[in-house]
Length: 528
Image: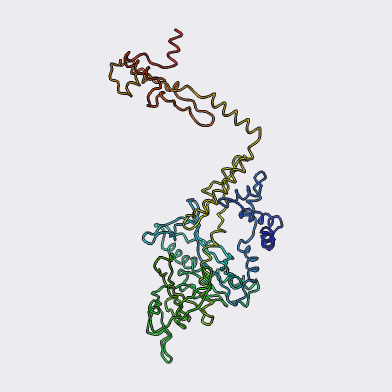
């Protein structure tokens, strides 16, 4: 069993996605090239990785521009294979939005967004595309002491609606308001949840309960109002959300008059803390929580009954000699009123895996960058700055930096070995000899200029001094060789340093300024 055989076994289910066998083979080949390619995963580098740089590239680009196939259907084999490792009744799916940074100003879907890595005291903006991703949480910790793995099963773009200009009419503004209500991140979350329910039923999980877990941006009225059937919602809530109980029987009210917040439940000493064990951080840990059932959120969920789960802050130490630190508490709202709290907490703690899984499969759009078919270009095809992984903070550890540097050196060494042939060596030597032959004469300055630099105050005739300044710059300019370098200046040749011969300097001071010591002019004077 090898990684290649397992990859081909998974992608064998893509045959029904593509209309023809040749497009299926081409799609699998590009997917494999994107895994082993170094640097940015653009189509140009994928073709070079697969060894197709000397053949026509049109068919590779036509796969994305002319062939009709649905990209979201590529995740079906992954979902079907992963269900075998999810024997429990609850199937956790983490959904989160991610940003793909862009620098081009002509991308219609790109817009400025809040940078999640900006400090809390200064909000930064980044230009990029927005995607909504869903990952299946596979609980491997049930059979082995390993953490949960998040497998991507959905990845689609969620672009914003373009705002009308200042000169737009009232009709255009009204259309914009209606379009924002129908095309936003929450509506995309609801539509993706319905699609995942259908895909899960098609894969054989019609008896499973789908648990859609998300962050605080999905804790709103839109997401709670349209939960798919046989599905529940588990999201993080604000600590100041106004909650209440159902009004007493016989009352005309539906919501009770008493309001409370999740923060007040955490500080209420009359409600005892409960404990349970979940697998997190490589081992099973004790978690304290409080549970309040049958609560209502009038502004967020309407009349749908919810369950509030308050997770106590967990103390930790940076090392054994440091003091205890406490993380912030978490407040969860879920529409599941019957499942065990331990299962819901385990799914929510496993949700952080989506941040790890979404860094490895983001592929930038196809970029048409024609390249010359020169073997020397391969060395520059993978610069270190482009082969760096786009981490959220873009700061790598020293070990990771050293590993990537060694990998880049190996690639450069392999490419350099291709040029170790007699023909290439002969051409290289010829270029070097040609560069030496084309080197121009060195710049020679006059003794008058030397006296000015070294502070000699003797009488210097104006004509000689001006003649020293008015030399022909073309004759003194050092020639540029084929390698792009110019001749270096030697000591005493106008570099500002002292001359090599001290006696000649003393003789020049005694005798005064002599004729201009230009090599060309001296040669002409000797001929005359």
